[in-house]
Amino acid sequence: MTKFFTSLLLAVALGFAAPSGSLAQGAVSETYSSEELVNAGHQFFGSLSQGLASLVERAISQFGQPNAYILGQEGAGALFAGARFGEGTMYTRNVGQREIFWQGPTIGFDVGGDGSRVMMLVYNLPSVEAVYGRYPSIEGSAYIVGGLGMNVMKRDEVVMVPIRSGVGARLGVNVGYLKFTSEPTWNPF
Image 1 (cartoon, rainbow, N blue to C red):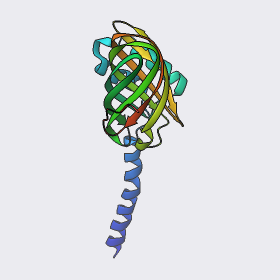
Image 2: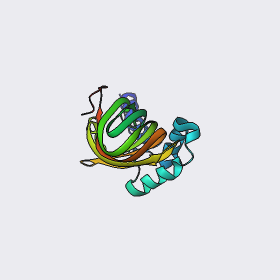
Image 3: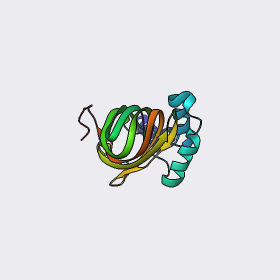
Image 4: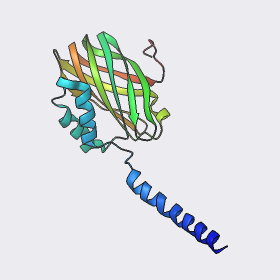
């Protein structure tokens, strides 16, 4: 009987000791550091990523560390009214990776077309489903050959900061929104 209680006491003590050690070693932040984002961006953007670190640092200084980010590509075109379509993968610490799509109309003094690689920093995302919806945007673009640009979109408490590396010819200012969905669609509305 004494052996049984000794074994039980030892098992209980190990049971309490093991979780605290494994939690301390396995604990990860639910946000992404600027170093992690810059490394992911450099791998994704390749040779077009020279100004990426300063844009990521600027976003983090303004909004803090994001709890998700999206890597993807998009295409857009406009002749005063236009549309933007994109697809990518959203990365989160607690849910992993999810495929995501976006589309939206634009209107304004905007002419041309472009194709972009996009890294979107996502802040204050309470759940993966909270990313789906419309995010209003005001954009100005003046890149002819290439470069990096950043703007900010907000819906409720969720803040989205797209960093684009564009190639194309597009000049102007537009107002619109991006609608994020779990399935692709050709309807920009």
